Length: 79
Image 1 (cartoon, rainbow, N blue to C red):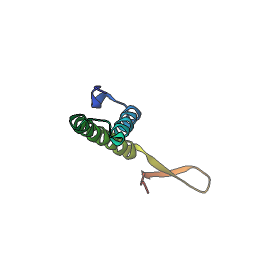
Image 2: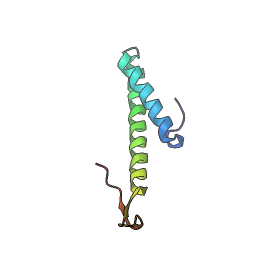
Image 3: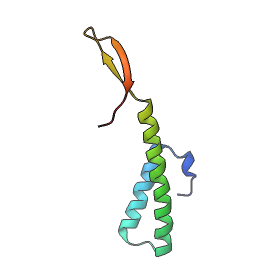
Image 4: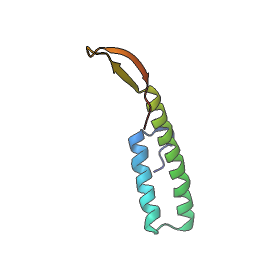
């Protein structure tokens, strides 16, 4: 749990965030531990959001013409 957040992959950050949420929801953590978990969880959430934003910026939807050939690209718009 003490890995630098910046070095975590999206998947690893998400897994750790899920573990933290589970620990917080269990109610078994002390107040001080809960605060530390919450703070790390918030940083992990921010890291995941940044990684998703970066991925979305790189995704392009390809438009095809009648022959199935790409005619242009446009930025991906998440629904």
